[in-house]
Amino acid sequence: MKPLAGRRVVITRALHQAPELAQALRRAGAEPHLLPLIEVVPPRQPELLAETAQQAAQGTFDWWVFTSRNAVDALLDRLPATPARRPAIAVVGAATARHVEERGYPVAFQATRADAVSLGEELAPEVAGASVVLPQAADARPAIAAALEAHAGRLTKVEAYRKIIPPDSADRARQLFGDGPLGWVTFTSPRIAQNFRGLFGSRWPSRRPSLLAASIGPVTSRALRRLGVAPTVEADRATVDGLVAALAAFRPQG
Image (cartoon, rainbow, N blue to C red; front, side, top):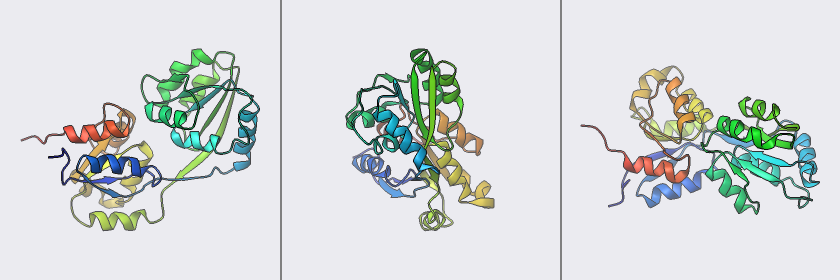
């Protein structure tokens, strides 16, 4: 029997990123249901991102630093030409590294822990005196930029995308949960955790005890705890496979 046979699991990541997790869950026997709580939309000033992509194509930057697959796509989709010279590329984790390589670029540096703070701290000595571009989300935490700015010769930060909650999320949540137990729900970012909590408004304290939260890693787990939820499982590796493995390994107590 497959390890997740018959288990319903709600996927809350962005719709364009959900298929990989849904397929992995189905292979393990689960029944995935989609509840996208993040929608990736263009930056407020797309002309600034286009200008930065132009500079990247001209070989202006020694390092390209990516903290998510969304940031990878935001920059690479706007490159007007093949870069005049290949930069060194640094990434936050294995999933982002794979995505960069699938798009035809080698990865020079990967953080030992898959979070932006670790990437900033570990990469800072490597970029001393270098020109660095950091495309990131509008709500990105400032830690990585601060660490790089203190060492890089020049750091170019650019808003690459924004994250909003899809307008039909509340209706979809009512269809999936009604007044019953919430059950297994996956969480792959702090913003998703916050958006999930927001779906329930004043009913959150009475609904959260029935939530079985599957967290992709420590950063997301901390966000869940701030919302009063102890993650039921946490992935050892911040990847789709790591998340599914954590779900498959879960054994209820008693």
